Length: 125
Image 1: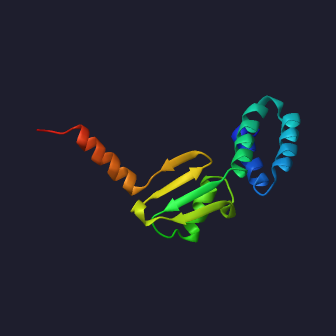
Image 2: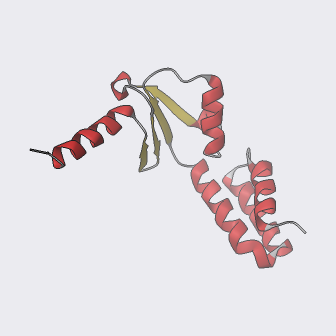
Image 3: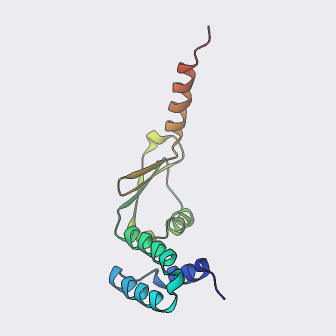
């Protein structure tokens, strides 16, 4: 017997290139076939559906290779062509990912600023 995660992963793989309306149809079929696991599966599908309609921007300090772009897209469960990639040398290194109004800042400039602020707060005489 398949777990909810196995079913969800299969559905996500299958629905990767589907529209929101097609995902709704898939969700309806899941409810009728797997009622006891439907809440978990539908929650994951809803997140995927929301992600498909969300603007995603990846900002990096230098050019990102196609392989890296694909890995980022896969980790976000979104197609590569739905992500805007921007280069901002002011980041010094790392990346910033903007998903809708959420920001994941893994840039070197932010890390340096945090260390600088921490050192300023712990000033030793």
